[in-house]
Length: 355
Image 1: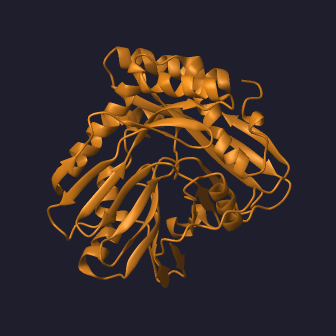
Image 2: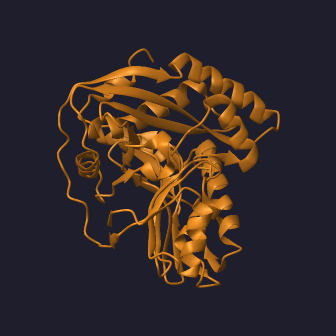
């Protein structure tokens, strides 16, 4: 879909949802932050076009990209993982998603729309997004969030609802034999299956107040992107009240334990303690029309583009549970950086320097 112009900004996402339900606006597009009490970048567009056509892929442009900063440094990330594992084993939480970020500098200015096309070129479904963040206020003036999320938070068409949560990840290999072995290890991993179950059960609970029927398969499917294998579960449901919009559902389900943890409030507090403010990473991007239909994806495999178009931030996280190993968790985040770095035309190996 595409949206042009801004008729009205909605930094408060709940006001946007209310405006949709009452017919005060013709549609809403934009981004939800990880912390839903922070300003959202939602707005009513002057023109919104919903299309089933895939985004035009653009071969990534080779450009000079340097790592300006790692937050935190690899050794500190592993220390944080070890600290969280201790707290989880002590019963403080069930799962907490811990992320780290790379601040990047580019020698050429980045065009957010072209970058979305580069993200789409590495995605079999041509799924990518580019969202201006100005509606969130002065702090985000001129900034964008751009990426290709593999994780569908929620789709609503009429009374039909569909979700496809991801949780549990291993890097792919260019060697077909090794790649198959890694896929099999993920499919049979008790740690990753437990992490995935947290997310599925959370979404089931959050859908229950809105839906009369919820169908959840007993076992997750094994799906792949260009760089990673994932565990994913397709969830279908039927709305009890057709007045419930896609944005209502997105607000009820975001952030999911795939980016937050369980219990949700405890995990959010621990994330704030270790990471600080995530901004829009781990939130959701999407749209909702005046019929209540819409699509929202989890804001991962993405890049934050600064107003100067030369400074960028990309994030990667992993679910920490009692069985987590700090070195393995570090390697998972390094592998996840590859999607954004390839779209930028950079060598993914720069993410691993000093690791």
